Length: 68
Image 1 (cartoon, rainbow, N blue to C red):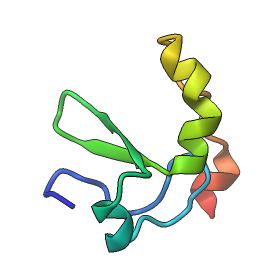
Image 2: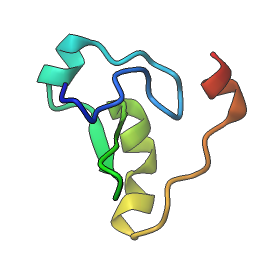
Image 3: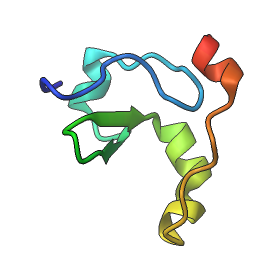
Image 4: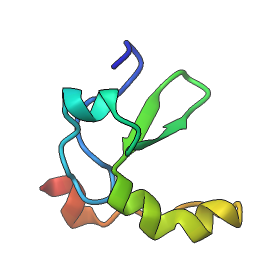
């Protein structure tokens, strides 16, 4: 993980991102203008794939996932 990555968890399901995940290709990343990179787990990425391909914003994060 680099200095601008948020190592924590998937913003949609709260699955923790581990060092092994950082080396793999399963997680997707979203890069913001301020240099922040947010990573989404593979399962949530696949659920949102049709929205990504249609250039739509991902569905909002569920509050309970962030609280977990």
